[in-house]
Image (cartoon, rainbow, N blue to C red; front, side):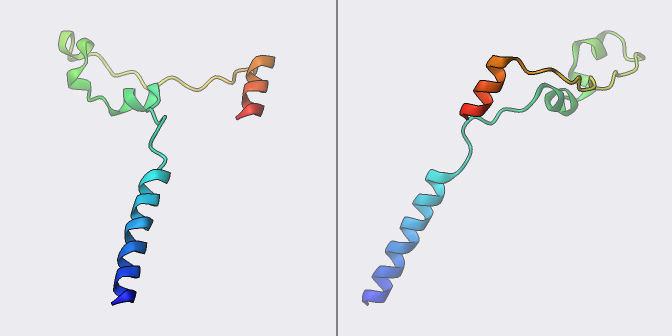
Length: 76
């Protein structure tokens, strides 16, 4: 009986800890991912002209970090 209660309590504690430690906060999709995920039929440009070719997502451009950006990265 004691083992059953102990197992039940440990199961509840484990599930609560997993729920607390889940990394769900602060996750947002990037602009590129949103642009890729959006179907072409729903965009305003597609409704106006259906014959227009869809542009690919923008290429990433390397950006030099500022001193403030470097210190912000060091802090986190």
